[in-house]
Length: 82
Ligand SMILES: [Zn+2]
Image 1 (cartoon, rainbow, N blue to C red):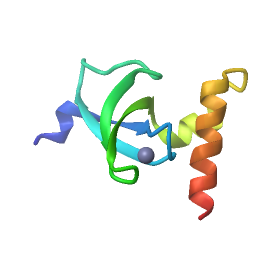
Image 2 (image 1 turned 60 degrees about the vertical axis):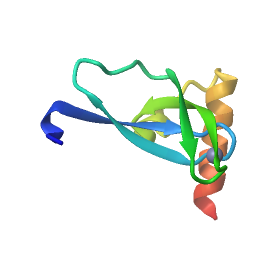
Image 3 (image 1 turned 90 degrees about the vertical axis):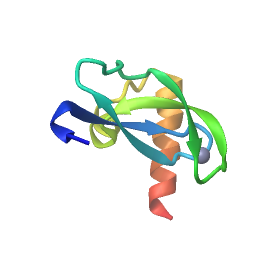
């Protein structure tokens, strides 16, 4: 795989807060908050993940008035503390 043609994007499992990174071909990126069904290794099931592109940027810049994003941030942070 030629990584020059791909960009990484992070997706959050809305059930457990686990982050999965996938690669998308350049020019075919989805916008943030795109939903994608992915297998979560933690939950052991296919879950509709929430795409945030870069998790660290998302944690700093998420929309605090968006309850979905707020819940996701809380999940991710509580998972990181463990
Ligand atoms: Zn999960």
